[in-house]
Every structure is written in C-alpha cells, then in structure tokens.
Length: 498
Image 1: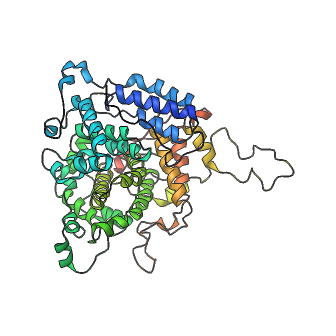
Image 2 (image 1 turned 120 degrees about the vertical axis):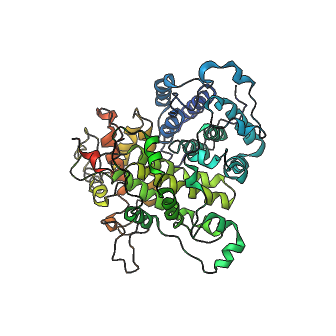
Image 3 (image 1 turned 45 degrees about the vertical axis):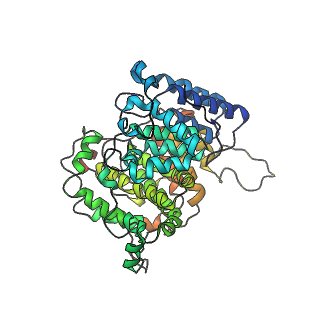
C-alpha cells in the first residue's frame, strides 16, 4: 500500500462542462486504484501505462462517470501489477536519498520509487522535490542523469508529471517521478549544457555573462527548423529500414557529429540573458512549440496521399500541452529554463529519427476548418422563423469533436485533441503571417518555410479534424484508425500504396 497523499483533482486546462459530483468521485477513485495496483509499464518492453492519462483526458473533455468507468474496465486488464513478477522481496526495499542511485533504471523498483517520491513530496512539497531529484547538479552526473531519464520514454514521465501539475494531483507527480527513475537515460549527451551562445553555463555564471557585454537574442523556433533542414550533417541516416526499431534508429543517429550539430542548433533558441530574463520569455517559446509540433503532426505528409500522423510527433504535441502547468510548479527560474531547454533537443531527435520530414504548411492548411463526423451533414436543422442567423451555415466543429472523442478507444486520441483544443483557445484567433518566426527578414518577404505565411489560427482545428478522420469518429460508426510508424521523412517510406 502506498503512503497516503491527497488524491483529489482540480479542473484541467480545457475543462469542458460535464464535471458533476459523480464524475469527480469516479475519476478520483479510479486514478487511485491505478496508482495503487498498476506498474507504469504494461509490458516487459517498457510500453507505458496510459490508463490515468486516458481517464483525465476524458474527464477534462466532459466525459460522464459511466464513460470513465468504461475506460477503466476496458484498459485495466492489460496492465501489469505494481510488483512485476510477484517478487515478495520487493517489500524489503527501502529507497532513501542516500541509496537512491543504487536502484535507478530498474523497473522492478517502481513501487519502491513511488513510495519514496510520495514521501518526499509530503515532506518537501512538489517544487522542492523536483528541484532535488530532477534539476539539481547532484542528480545529473554520470550514473544518475535524472533530467535525461525524465525526458526519456517518448516524454511519458514529463506527461505523467504534467498531468499531476495540471490537475493539482501530488499523487500523480509522484508517479511521474517514479517512472522517470526507472527509465534509462536517453541520449544524455543531447542534454549537456549547450556550448554556444545561450549556453546554460553562461546563464548561470554572471561573470561570464557580463564579459560578453552585448545581449544576444535567440532565434525563433521556425528559423531553427529551417536550419535543421539546411544542415548537411543532419541528413537522414541511410539506408532506410522500414523494420528498424526506435532504439536502432536513435543509435544510428547519435554518430558522425550529429549530437554536436543538434546541440549547436538548439542553443540558438536562447539568448545570453539572465535566468530571470529568459524565464520571462518562456510563454513565447511555449507558443512556438504548439505551432511547430502541430505542423509536424499534420503537415509532414504528402499531397495527394492519405494523411499519415506520426506517432512520435503526436507525443511531442501532447507533451507541449503540459509545459505551462509544469512551469507553474517549478519555483526556480534556472530550473524553468532547464526544463524548456531539455525539450527541444529531444524533439529534434525524434524529428531526425523519423527521417527529417519537411513540414508542408499548405498541406496542413488544406484540411477543412469545419470537420464533421460522417453522419452529420451540413444541413440538419429546421430552425424557427424567429431565429437570428442560420445555424446550418454557422458551424462550430469543436462541439462534435469533443462529444465524439471521449469514446475513442486509443488514449492518445483524446490527449491530442485536448492539446489542439487548448491551442485553439489561446492561438486560434491569430491571423495569417503572425506565427512567430514566419519570415527570415525584417522586410517580411522571405518565408522561413514555403507557405508558412498562409498559416493562421485555424491550423489547430484543421489538425483536430484530420486526427478525427484518421483515428476514426468511432461514436459515429467509423472503425478505429492507426498512428504512423513508417519514418515518413524517408522517401522510401512512401513507396507502398496507402
């Protein structure tokens, strides 16, 4: 039994109406059952338990108690028990701050780590626990690499901790940190302090910063994306192997000067300002990430072909949603900057092991801004003669999207729709040519990426529509679709017919 900690949850970022007392009670009860009973990996390959993610995404999108219970009943049988293998000796393991290092990276100690982090959060609070066990120098040396572990596993520790931050659940933060502790460190060389303008050591050292004198501004993220495309060093690793697993592609990538080039490009996102000044500009970087990850997901296919939505770009967008909530529970400006700094090289790595697909803004904007379920026509209502306006000509697609997606069988679908809904709320009003970094020149004549000046705030609902069309409007009779694992940046990945 895990130590007692508050299991209440607060409204999420989207907060669709539907949160009644029964839904609240059921959501909290099922989340606690998952925490007490289930391991964070549902199989021995390290595939992640998404049950709590699914429950909270549906809860935030207005799912009633009956749907939340149905999600748990459908997904819990596939989970593994929290003590994998039924090892009775695990009860004797007591992880402390002194012996912590002995157990990292070993999945069998997940429950012991969950107990440890739950106790640390109760004693220190969430912010200080994150500071000590994710961001401090002492846990980011060889053998620890906790920030790298936190970024490992397709962002899942980040996402789990982010759910805890967003919904005010200290219990879920503990789950996220325990998960990070048993992850392997993923390419820690990418998270070394960037040796270029904007390097983290410069931010931390006032004397170094002052010697530079002139303040340099970081590049917009779209400019860095252009630099990735232009880099000779970062060309896709050949030959293309359709059967290569993720780790094989990652190992092939991390050679021949590519890690150094990735760090160099990532460093250009940052200025040489103080941590406090950098932290003040993080909201802009969050916005940039929403635009770029949405374009990677919805605009990296090919015109005239069936849409392909890459599994890892979907995770990058989902993870972006949690950045504002994570930043709120981190009290230290230096650590806030470290968190965001860690995100870009990992996302760049995923882009490169997908074959460096080029975004096509025109493709992303070609999808309809008024997506409809297959059974909903444009003319369905017979309005009264007293009506103001025409409801058959005025259509908000989000009502149908949100009402349908809570029934999706794949947890990733309501998660990504939630991210796109949040982005629409914050950036959906943006006009064309207002995406940060659209132009390379002050005269606003040279586009960073061809067609990017045509992108406006409807990008997010267009992306939501193609997600629903691809994954299936299951509440309206569609069969569930699939995410793409082909490595769609390689031309050979498109040789097979749709």
